[in-house]
Each structure stands twice: as C-alpha cells, then as structure tokens.
Length: 68
Image: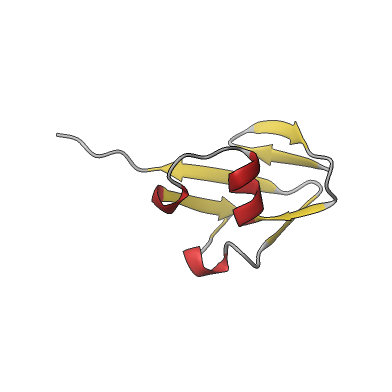
C-alpha cells in the first residue's frame, strides 16, 4: 500500500497498518511525544491502536519541541 507521510509517499508491504504499527515501522523515537493527523483529523492517543491506515491515506506526524 502507498501512504503519504508528512508529504512524502511511502510504500508498505502490508495492506493495512494501525497508527501504532506505522509509528513502529517508521522507527519514530518517543512516540508518546508525537501527535498524529490522519486524513486531516487529529487523533486521540488512545485511538492509535485501533485506527487503520489504508492505501492512499495521508498521515502527518507532529513533533513538539521544547526550548526557550
């Protein structure tokens, strides 16, 4: 399947992944610190394990940085 992640199209062997599986596949460090937008909708963290990503979906990983 093809998924657009942060504006870049990427290809995966699986037909479907959950958001949690996608975070693991992309080797996202500290996934607890990442917000996710799926097809234009912000997801609640408790839905990461149940939200399916399918061919043609768009996902944005939003990283929050601290500093001063």
